[in-house]
Amino acid sequence: MVAGKKQFTLKNLPPLRKASSYPTGSPATYDYIVVGGGTAGCPLAATLSLKYKVLLLERGGSPYGNRNVSYMENFHIGLMNMAPDSSSQAFISTDGVINARARVLGGGTCINAGFYSRASSSFIQEVGWDEDLVNKSFPWVEEKIVQWPKIAPWQAALRDGLLQAGVAPFNGYTYDHVSGTKVGGTIFDETGYRHTAADLLAAGDPNNLRVLLHASVHKIMFDSRQGRLKPRAIGVQFTDENGRHHQAFLNNNKNSEIIVSAGAIGTPQLLLLSGIGPKDHLKSHNIPVVLHNKYVGKGMADNPMNSIFIPTRSPPRQSLIETVGITEEGVFIEASSGFGQSSESVHCHHGIMSAEIGQLSTIPPKQRTLEAAQKYAHNKLNLPKEVFHGGFILEKIDGPLSTGHLVLTDTDVRNNPAVTFNYFSHPQDLDRCVFGIKTIERILKTNRFSELAAEGTGFSMERVLNMSVQANVNLIPKHTNDTESLEQFCKDTVITIWHYHGGCHVGKVVDQHYRVLGISGLRVVDGSIFSRSPGTNPQATVMMMGRYMGVKILRERLGRAAGV
Ligand code: FAD
Image 1 (cartoon, helix red, strand yellow):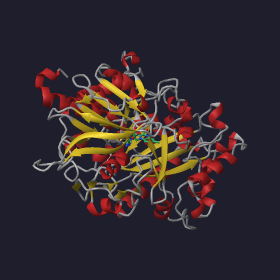
Image 2: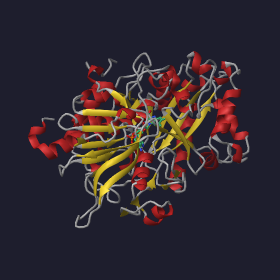
Image 3: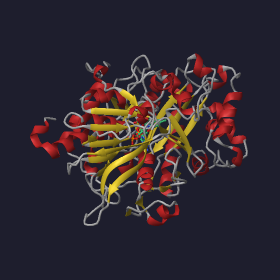
């Protein structure tokens, strides 16, 4: 397959300056202040800058020159790096599942597994998007940063195994969401180099777009003077990399807006810190209430993922996600294999999802901290590579009915709020997990997979379930019947595929146009508005949404003169 990428150059990138360069008391004002230079924030800011002055504030650093971001082989290392300047900020949900959120310009696209697959047309209809504009916005992203993968052997095996197991038809290479088996796009090029949402900033107007890195926004400021129908967002307060405080303001145009694109954890957190949320919760943290809204932080969901570890005869080449099986039952089957082959990765550690630190589950639950995981990984440095021969087949539940919530633990924006997803609290989610594991069992029984088995004699399901329990790294206590009851296996080995979403639902926190209800001059554009994660994997649709909303806002203000 030829790469989907057309001629696109990064020469036009705006300067990426540190937040400390922002002059105190700067007289500059903006038409748009975008908080969060992530998957949605970058294409949104780039598009708005074509006509308006935009300030983009990102709490993390630059992805350029960061090896953990740029090279696929360092995917696991990037996730395990818990330094304060890491592009990934780990968190553990109250469910006991280790998770990660981006902290870098480009957001999730800088730390993710790169798989690119569009939302289904039914999703587009459900959310009420203009299909014509959607169909223009997806290619806008794709021609800049998306490629077809040179399919890795493990991914080819999954493709064949899925088809032999009846997850048919084969839909070839496609970005579209269609039942059956397909190969999707990727943001890694043929050398394993990652292209990210930050690259999309080059499509903006560098003269109109000011980007600040290490700018942590801790508060949105409002004009709540009496006589105003609604409080109006007028500016933001942020700290730079040296901990100094700054303020930035919108201009006086009535259409100017602050747009929060801080992701499904960062956006509800920032609304709460700014005084928008359940009043009792705000009061308990001494946050002055700007607007009582009991729904901020509610309806958080994370698609549960369970993975089966499969030992192989020879070490499979590293691959993240390239193939997916889309079942009618709403279960998606994907795979990953091997570990990075660079000197940093193989001899270092292999990340929170790897068998290597699976032994963490043998540590008593209370001692299973992120530090313990790191220590364990460190102690494993001398293990021979052969121990890690194998790959994972994963299953993800689409649209989980189990939901949870997010609350502040303190008022420091750098700290994670407490997030609860309540995995498998709805019985239908559990049924679908069991269906997914049974589908994987069928795949393992196909000729294609029997040939890959370490002994060349196929896989015993009990053995791989047992290894998968051993390899599992969540902090949920294990049970002796994990390999006998698939329900118990699902509950005890649930991990994340990092597709968490929600917290600012449409109709509850934002309106149809993603304007925050009860406030003027404030919108949300990111994964927090979703009640369901789009596509098999969300990044395609989140980037598309950034572009889509940018064009929509320009058209609303300028009509045909928008020229986009
Ligand atoms: P983000 O991209 O996270 O953007 C939020 C941005 O806001 C971040 O850059 C953050 O630093 C910044 N921010 C937050 N708070 C503040 C603040 N107070 N001030 C200033 N800035 C702030 N999806 C796929 O489609 N395919 C995959 O293969 C895939 N694999 C994944 C693997 C991992 C490890 C992860 C974490 C995610 C993966 N995803 C994948 C999911 C996908 O990447 C995310 O759903 C998507 O990136 C979310 O986009 P967002 O715009 O909502 O948030």
